[in-house]
Length: 65
Image (tube, rainbow, N blue to C red; front, side, top):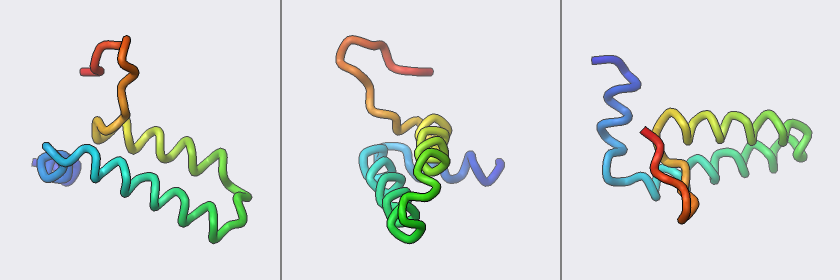
């Protein structure tokens, strides 16, 4: 079992909390860098949401596998 699999297992059922953590982490980096790297931080947040399956779904779109 890989490290990422272990993290995903721990986050199962707590996707909302994980999403809040991703947001807080990105906001912290933006604050500390004066939004200098905002685009890169946003990309990293999106990739983390994709990896951990915490991306909020639009009401009309099906869930991602």
